[in-house]
Length: 95
Image 1: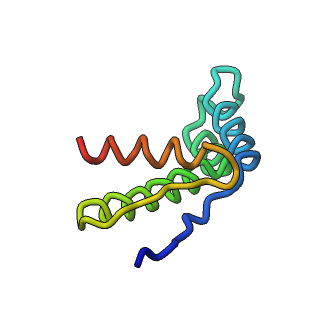
Image 2: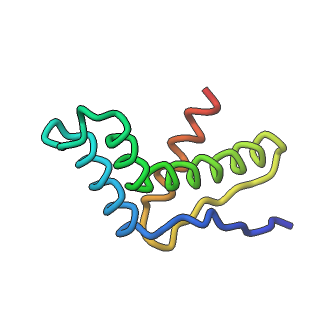
């Protein structure tokens, strides 16, 4: 019998805000772009790495289940955001 698991990802609105902060930190207009420590602090403060870690960790679980011959259903209650990225990483890892 399959066991349901959750990826513990944030909802799309939290992830979108995080992405906006990341893009702001990386933009040429950022006042911290020339200061490496300040730039890295801005990137870390965006929490984007937390979202990627969650998605990649979930993808590793999916890959391991598929390779072990277990069926997998990927579903996101908040739309297709998690599904898209999880499956993108899944195919990337298998290639």
